[in-house]
Amino acid sequence: MSYVPSKLRKKIDWLFKRAEGALLPPALLAAAGTHLDPDGARLALRACEDDVAVVGDQARLAALLQAVADPSTRGDYQAANGVCGVRRFDAGPRTRIYQLTVETFPRHINNVYAVVEPGSALLFDCGSGLPTSRRDLALGFAVVRSMYEEDIRWEALDWCVVSHAHVDHYGGVNHLKRTSTAKLAVHELDARVLACFDERLVLAMKDVDAYWRRAGVPAARRGPLREMYMASKSLFRAEPVDRTLRDGDVIGPGYVVRHVPGHCPGLICLQIHDVLLTSDHILARITPHQFPQAITAFGGLEHYFRSLAKIRELPDIRLALGGHEAPILDVRTRIDEIDAFHRARLDRVLAICEVPLSVDEVSSRMFGEQEGYGVILAIDEAGAHIEYLHQLGRLRVDNLDEVATSEDPVFRYVAR
Picture 1 (cartoon, rainbow, N blue to C red):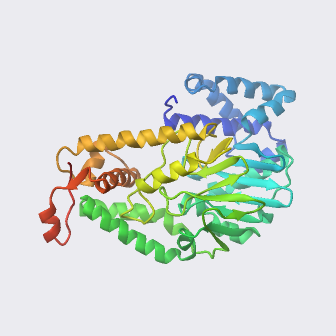
Picture 2 (picture 1 turned 90 degrees about the vertical axis):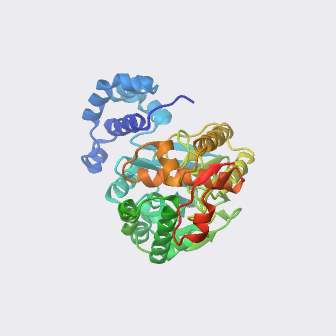
Picture 3 (picture 1 turned 45 degrees about the vertical axis):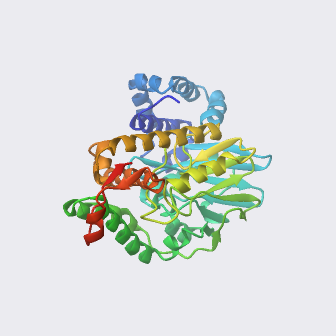
């Protein structure tokens, strides 16, 4: 798989979504608001054709320009690429899956899925609940009705299945409960995050701060990190859950729950016949973020590796659709790539730990200087790999006497 810088990929996707506004009926384009700017977006795409060529999208750009000029070609373009962030996929003879791309945070894009068949309308995830997220969901449903002639409405959904308790996937639950008839389902290990949110927020912050202390993050840095960790989470308020899910459960007209802990304790994939909605478990281009089990039970690399192997063994999966990024046509090959990536990162951690180092020091050597929330993600990622190697006995705590006698020790790890 060729490497494409994520910022460039997001820029190109953003421009295409807006440029495709020219394919919408005028009334729908006018109702969508000023964030769709088809003329300006097309000019920007033409201006960055070198960038488009880098990521292999020059043919798509030519097809879009043709579709704008010649309405008879618009159906072919829509079938191949979707329109304004909405794409249709079929799963079996009666089931349609609509991918709705949603800006959940600034420059952060999620895929929300509307799954439709006769007598059933189910939503898989619901965005962050922020204004841009609600805006893009409203646009997505309008595009599905207008461009795909599918009579599905946000306010008349049957179920919303939350894939896991990360706020870009569940934050829209408050809006959903106010404006839709949908019942809410989530895995039992993540249900209390939604239903007992205030308690979870306090306890999680305590656990994370304790881990940062053991990881060697200085007190002067922990304060700003705590503020960042809590910032987006304060936007949500607790909501009751209508159904808790377990591995193998069936929801809707026969959709099967696959529990895949690791990236999050209650993370699930949802199998829609021969299509698998993978959420953040398996993504097309990046490797999903990992954190230590020491922070939250059912996290950590051991759970993640087991969950990858579990999905790899599923028969008859024709297509995988992730919570971010592009569709995955060969999920087993992608699983092998992700597994190999983490094995290589484990080897790198071992090499770095030839001398005793804290988790914070390993994080700095692995990822360099980080800014904003990237600091937290880097510490988590380094910590998950260190924890796994320590569990296997390939790293040991070098300063054991200090750990035994100090009230607030920093753990330093060295390769055996």
